[in-house]
Amino acid sequence: MEVWALFFICFIFFIFAWYVHDKYVQRKHQILVNYPIIGRLRFVFQEFREPFRQYFGDEKFYESMDKLDWVYNAARDKTNFASFSPGQPLPKPKFMLRHTNIVLNDDEVENDFSVTFGEQREFPFVTKSIIGRGPMSDGSISPEGTRAFVNGSYLASFPINSGEGGLTSNFFVSHSNYDTRYMKEVKGTPFEEKIFKACKILFNVPVAIDFYRKIIFRKDPLADTYVFNKEKECFYRPNWDAPLDVFPKNVPDDMPDIILQISSGFYGVRDKEGNFDIERYKKQMSFCRMTEIKIAQGAKQTGGKLIASKVTPTIAYYRNIEPNKDAFSPNRFPYAKTYEELFDFIGSLQEASGKPVGIKIVISDNDNIVPIAKEIKRRIDLNLPYPDYISIDGGSGGSATAPLDMMERIGMDIRDAIYLVDKVLKEYGIRDKVKISASGKILTPDDVIITLCIGADFIQIARGFMMSAGCIRARYCSGASKHQCPVGLATQDIKKRKHYFVKKHSDYIKNYHNNILKSMKSLLAVMGLKNVKELDKEKLIFLDRDSIIHDDMDSLFERRIFNSTQNTKIN
Image (cartoon, rainbow, N blue to C red; front, side, top):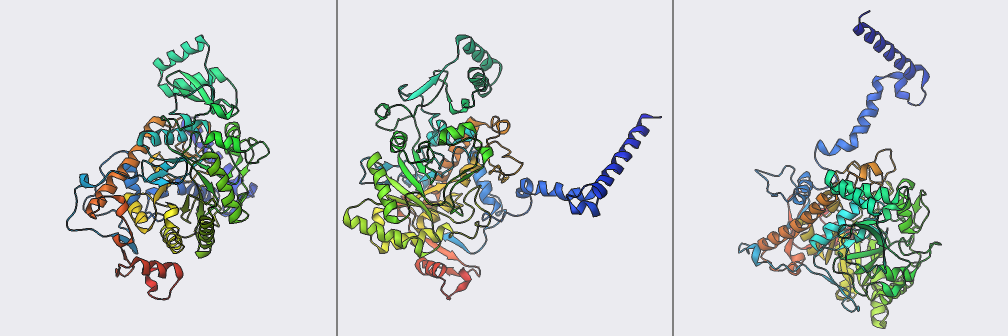
């Protein structure tokens, strides 16, 4: 018998057996009983839906695909000009910027984008940029991803928020000039060092470092808690058991500006029993500029959730928890049964660190901010501690692990929320005492300018920085499905993350930040403004669905937020 005929008979038999299995054996999928074999196309298309959705059709979640393209082009330092027309015009209603006929040249706009937090603290935080990377925990992000963000932050001089995972070893990758009294070093034997040097010649440096790590630590599950010092050619990590007095009194110059976030789980600043550890907090604040207490995040009004597959021994070490178990934080911050209790706790942190402390919340209505404003006002009058800033997060999405039933159902759009918070703080006469930070689907320079006009002092960007770091928006961040982040950015899967290009993406992150500021200067020039601090609501107009122009922002937001029946078309 000819070989081809034998293959054909085998193929027919295989198809017949497959048909019989789907129709008469399996009882898992109803559709396969009625449509054997061909019904499996449904599952194939379902698999393709998420990773391929961004390549077909218009962008629906963000304002336009053009905005996403801007982020990717800015990260690669490409010219962000368009030809003929936008690929997908911004939908109405939309905010517009007022320009002037007598414009400025870009070099006439000042380069001062600094913001000062906690002026009355012993160590106020004066940022070098008005933009920071929003909170993303080392754990939800891969170690390599965190290192890229830290390097990018250091290179571009913008603040980086630690996320609720705390200050891990990966935040020290730029800190090579350290005191070994608070840093533990591990080096290989002379023979192992020679092997490492040979690997550097034969392979690229990251591969050589990875191999060196393996031969030094072998099967030590905590090998990844060490980062590599290229100058000394050794591995190192902070020794949090060292006495407090050996830690630096000032933040080292070779570290980025870090905002330490503390969540209800106290990760990074807790003892084995889960209680807040003030000594550990003081040690971590030796390397951080200010503190953010996470009360809520986006749609996630529950505690942080890191599923077991992401709680590796390394992440468990950082957070002082058990490995390979779900890390689900309490919904309520332990010291926040009342605002008085929360602000007293803030006072203890301000006293312990001498640095600014703020809270992160989400706004649904007046009731979310008025009690806070009242308590701040009362405390200012009585000379009691209060938060130095309030970080406002937009309601939609909010986290890779936010409950789906909360997304789009909890919290205002960031622009409405910022207006409301700014308005209430002014009504209570405390706006000059409390800074406002904003986050939530802010991607491009025009987004930043509009949010600053509405009332924000500072912008924290998460999604935009994720995309600049290589994220393709496949939506596999949580690790809850059988799929992992395909680029190795938001996964603890060793095979995926080990191939992530740290140095390349550090440069992309730096470029994205720098190009936002560069384009902001161009927008300010067109608006006739010399400094970003000149932005206010008067610089905005609003175009509703019928192309009717609204130039009174206070009236506009009053109708949007307080549900007036007048001119409902703008909502």
